[in-house]
Length: 401
Ligand code: ASP
Ligand code: MG
Image (cartoon, rainbow, N blue to C red; front, side, top):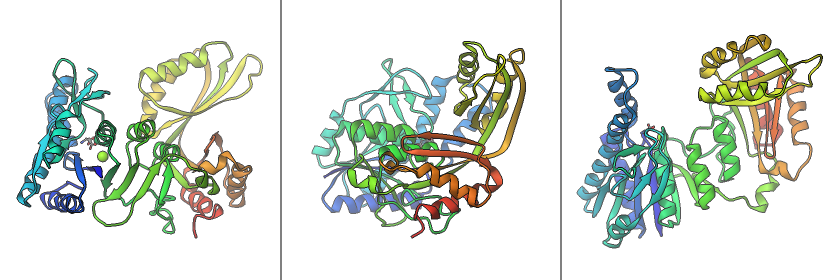
């Protein structure tokens, strides 16, 4: 089999850990697999490099930032290759450019456009283990680019696609995707399998094991993705395309997102274009808006509520305040959280949402906002009940056993 492994920052966070990764790769090699290994920078390294740049100016040029940040991954790629060679393996380390990864020109948040896998394929044919520096590529002008924070997951999936690999295994310090955060509910269980769509909902809801863009790409390319730990030999979780028996499970997971704040706008002028103006301006400021709710307008005015990430609230406030001629009252509430149940089984079973509402009602927890998609029910509640609600829902859908 041809396998792509990807090791995150914590997994390569020290020389001992790189040694540990070398042993794991070496073991997979001895099992007879061809291997391409994508690595992140050592944990903390990317942040440290950003701080270095900020010593000189708060706004360093993006092209220089890419030059700077891409170096972190090169260090680990080279060290891992050296560690493997020291164990007697034939290995070669490549930068993104050497691996044939061509991106667009948007520095610090580049998109992969094409991958020419020839160099990787030739090295594999020569019996080499290929180690690739993640998170980076090169644009048409020949300048190094990076793919956005957490981007080495994306490198790994894209490489798995370009090589038609049998699987892409993403290693971190967590051994898979859980039914909920085990720190909130110790009865949480590791899932053996989950669909791409469920994973995307769980990731954007705060279960930060895999970078979202990488899951989207895996879905598009239909790549078998595994989330595994580099510190254990557990099976991990397989993220793959939806199958009929997945629908037997109503709810696969319960996700709590505490990094939420609510904006309520009262008596907004009820005229065409006002929502467009407000949300365009928020989008221009790169503020991600979620759960937008607008009421039916009465007497030329309407109420509008939405949530943003808590750490973006201050910026959202500034944008909203610039609309004071069209909005009569505004409220900003940080004491909320969002609890969601996710599962493809909702597509074919009725009553899943009703059960979520009754579960919270039975504990006297007031639901302040509701949003649903085909495979998700999200509820905004008071932050102080977030963990209780998570445990109640986990139990209600039978995830405790
Ligand atoms: N080193 C980069 C970051 O910290 C990319 C990655 O780890 O995936 O964001
Ligand atoms: Mg990462």
